[in-house]
Length: 264
Image 1: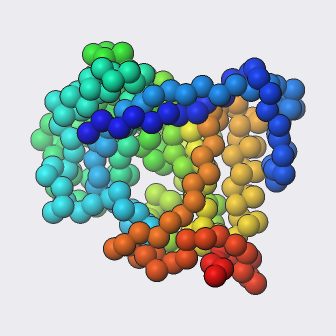
Image 2 (image 1 turned 120 degrees about the vertical axis):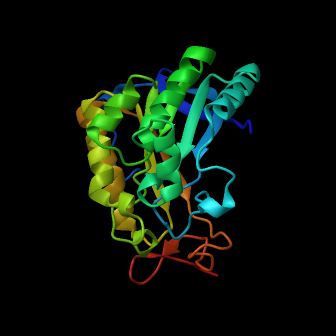
């Protein structure tokens, strides 16, 4: 499965204006002129198993609905080589978070091949892609601890994790990896390790406007201290069939309580 998509990153050059932003840019950013680069990437969905059960997710699947808990290394290399041949420069590893802690099938698959964890397998797969194809791995492995970020740092050009929302939301009640402090810790660890990092918000899953602003401010504060945030994604919620939030409204406005709501 080869998917081509451009990732926008920014560097100093060209004009850019900050308008109507609740988070003021840093002094350096106000003085900078920014230029957008598009990096064609190939997506490598290493596993669709996940221990989290977010109310809006359609990516995660149960073991009964996948042919194998993880892509094999031969499959990974086939996708990476197809991406390279199509002109990609980056390999984006997408995956569910820590499925081995929920599914015995995932734990057995990893153990049978000598891996201690999903992150351990991501590191090996990324190293193979880097050394064999020259594609730059980007690891989007979720909320990681410092030693896991360090392990992936040796085999990837950048890493990422969406903050989503710094709020206690019903959508995340069955998702232990979406704990706000865990996400913030990962963002901080990445900064301390000087890892170029992609993060962002998921808008419309029950958060208030103030909570969105607080999330943006937390990202800005971390970047102000470490200078490591390379991209901030603002992703809107859309209801999907066969999810817990299938009947939730798609459009975001402000209700009388300030929480996201629909408007006809």
